[in-house]
Image 1 (cartoon, rainbow, N blue to C red):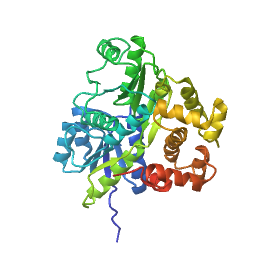
Image 2 (cartoon, rainbow, N blue to C red; image 1 turned 45 degrees about the vertical axis):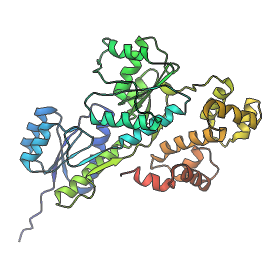
Image 3 (cartoon, one colour; image 1 turned 135 degrees about the vertical axis):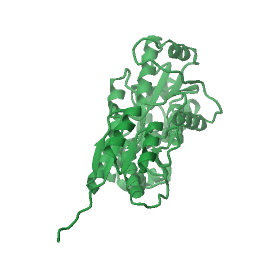
Amino acid sequence: MRKIFAQPRAIAVCIDTRDGAGRNRLHGVAQYVRRLGWRMMLVRQGGKAAAQEVLRLFPDGIIAYVADRWLVDCAEKLAVPLVDTALGELGVSMTVGLDNVTVGRLAAEHLAQAGLRQFGYCGVAGRLASEERRAGFAAGLGVAELPAFAEPVSEGESRLDPLMRWLTKLPKPVGLLVFDDKLGERVLTACRWAKLAVPQQVAVLGIGNDELMCEVSWPTLSSVSFPTSRLGFEAARMLAQAMAGKKISNPQRKIQPTAVVARGSTDIVAVEDSLVKSSVRSIRDQAGSLIGVKQIAEAMGVSRRTLDRRFVGGLGRTVRDELSRVRMQNARSLLADNSRSIASVASGCGYGSASAFSRAFRQHSGLWPSKYRDGLRVV
């Protein structure tokens, strides 16, 4: 008697891969799909054309990146589950997205600890994710309102006048959080046209850490990073549960950001005290070495007490606090690389042993490094 083998699942993946965020999501989906031997059908069209293509493919499930009404209607017609890998405006029942509130708070910490006292937000009108990031940023800064810009921005070098006018009117120096890295590049271009110095007058922080976009920007763009591949992987896992008829315990999952990847656009110490400025730059340069407050003070030619007093007056924190902050920021980035051992991360952050690093990381974040790495984190 011939055995009848079940057909492998076929899923339609509607993800725009023209930027790093889309490509990384697709990579995460592919990682999960390979484990189960599914057939992955890439839909390269957008909008109504994408939905028509999905109808022709007749998949068992759909994974999207900001699903539109045509795709939602398509899933209903086919009676198949749909998982979105971003927070959209349509209220999709199953999503795996970024914890935007935490993104905003992490950005607030990064810009405020540079000594900045004026802030603004550049977002996208009508996007719920943009509003969540703005609200998280404001909450992290402890303010109710922020100067905000949300008008459409031109793709080209010209026709940036509305954005340029808004940037020019902001009090300086100012720290800006921008909705994503693509828009961050536009903000940097507008600053250049408006003859606003970055980061001296306008410090710019993007979201997504699209390495190509960040590195081709001028100056290079600092950005909040998050495990984008994990969004795709978790979306595929959720889709597998839905296609198997299992109850989804948490259908609106959120993944936390990992760290701020600091580059040229936020390389500023917004204080008047030249001693504090020089010390902070020294800390940033040497945080991966086995140095302490004593060595930093000696290099600056002052006593520890004097340096601490100047730090508290200029930044509101001690030299030890600043050294720990920079090291923990580096640690979060290094822990996102699963190929590195905890001992290697400890060494890269200036700790003499893995145990000393682990205790410091737990004191700072409330988690042991291994627990932080395990989740990176789905909540």
